[in-house]
Image (cartoon, rainbow, N blue to C red; front, side):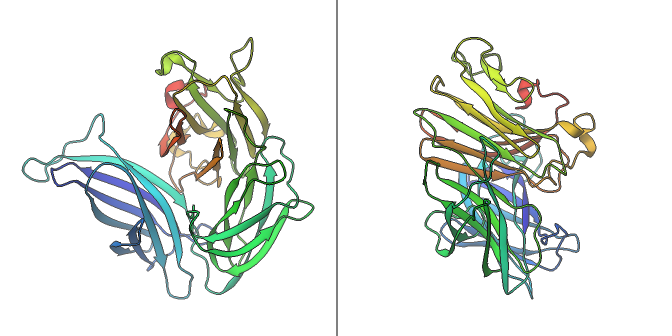
Length: 371
């Protein structure tokens, strides 16, 4: 199941009214019609349901009591296929330039778009989940990495363990489980930080599955990584953050492959640590300042044609942030034309992580405002 969300946010005194839209796909990323989609709160309370059309699309209006970060579950079911669950969060916030629409006395409707990760709706029955785990800072496969498998995308730590697995001497893993979407969780071990990565288990082969891990960050230190299908797209990882002064665009750095270190002289604050087709990593070291650090991806292969650039959304791109003992994961939205994906941002002063999932266009990686 792949779900992308279009939020139509009304701001009456009673709260926010949101129209959630999405799509359901199979392991080959083809649409699935006549699937039932249900929206649940973080604690499992039912919020509404819808049915996909022949294009796999669905929509559902939902009311929220207030703005802010809202955790939800999206579940999809279809006869003859396994149920898949998407755990994610919506960021409901006031818009700087809302589009006014007439919806009632004293009410104003504002349009915004929020995207969530694609999740495959696999066939029923047993299946195999296989892939490879790499060290994001070296590009080398990681052998003998142990992990647990939890049902659902970005499943919470409290989710039940379905099975356990480990990579072999070549960093590869293969395990049997009921078909569905899972989150692999590997606690810190053998000089490696805690990590998470998605695993789809299906009777049929699922394209491009890999996980990333890094050495434990120092004190303090932030690491970010981007993994994608290098055969489908050419992407750049971007990390932006405060230079140490103001936190506006003029006071922020932008590190990526064409500008790989900041500052250019003296002790580096941020630098590109590794780059290869399908894998990049950036580290912000002990000199980092309080403020927002944002992780984004740029489709440099289609930067000059942003209106038709869908390769970023078809690249199975995954973004990670490691900070202290925490790790966060997001994946690029599916089926949308864009050349910039703003994935997440971290406020290091208090460890607050915001899942942005914002799409934009830019013809150059030097366009700081786009990242």
